[in-house]
Image: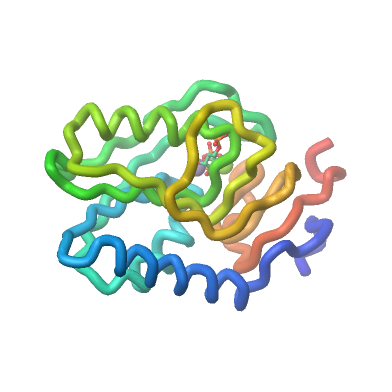
Length: 178
Ligand code: PRP
Ligand code: MN
Ligand code: MG
């Protein structure tokens, strides 16, 4: 285990199993449709790459960069769009792919933004969900795992840009950021 982790929540094997199941579910739900998968940089990148390969339908990729945490463990409350998608999503079936839904501020902002662009449908898929962090009415449509109210890193999730490449998911030691 990485020295800065307090404990592992999900191993590579557990993650793999969940991602395969999510891919199967999405494949069944979108039968006959084309999907535009929009990954939210940077945290979603690892999950995105694994998920899209488990969806056995045509999937177009696009990316948006949004950030609200910066180098803090608490949300700033302001979602900054640092890069927009370049796909015209009007009448398209969009799945927003995220690493985690915490307060829900990022996804609430992005979902409304996409609906204004007249997508045929907009659904949210997140590897992790932290119900105790929620400050909005946002709910994920496809969720990998629920996590406790701790600071989580690995599998794309960072603290101050570090730990994203840890291949499993764990709780960061408080001593690292206290
Ligand atoms: C994190 C995470 C989600 C969002 C979830 O992104 O990747 O995008 O926060 O939190 P919320 O539900 O409270 O909005 P972050 O702002 O850290 O940017 P990053 O993906 O580049 O790390
Ligand atoms: Mn993010
Ligand atoms: Mg982050």
